[in-house]
Image: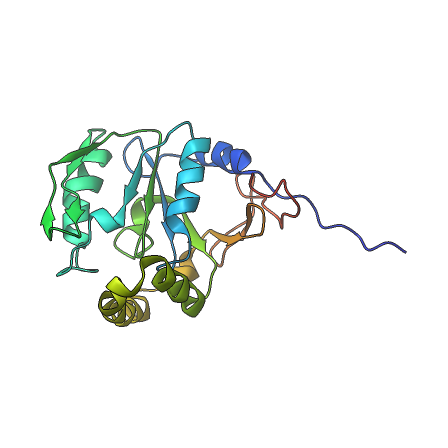
Length: 217
């Protein structure tokens, strides 16, 4: 008897369509958090999802964090980004330059129908009330950190040593994964999206395992 095939999962365009149909969560905006360990592939996935959302804005938390405030940026994010978006106004923030250790000129973030917030800490408790959905990149921390170290090279070895300890402390006190609506796994071709620990199946979240080249393409 042939082995039953798993149901085909959603494509990234299906996911984008579901996100568009969610109720706004921050004024007129549907804020969608993409969280996970450093090196887990958040930026790449967020970029692909943004493209499927017809160029939805992406706020990278690497632009909000600084050397002195790896995770202590909550008040600044709420004041400069969340509050104006909640009023239906463009947000303005100054991206941090990790090379000059200073802030670059202000950048605008429009109150688009969907705005992605990607980075370690995107699902922190202070931000979750404003999120329409929280996605977690499902890659173990050691595998994520190894990939991140290999990506950044020897020049960032000292920074990574400090980052790993800071990230451990952050997630120990303010974990995101238990509150994720969806888990995102990178596959040889594309991605696989599964219900997360906090996910409740419904018309906007009937995602299943994906397989083959169609998975999140």
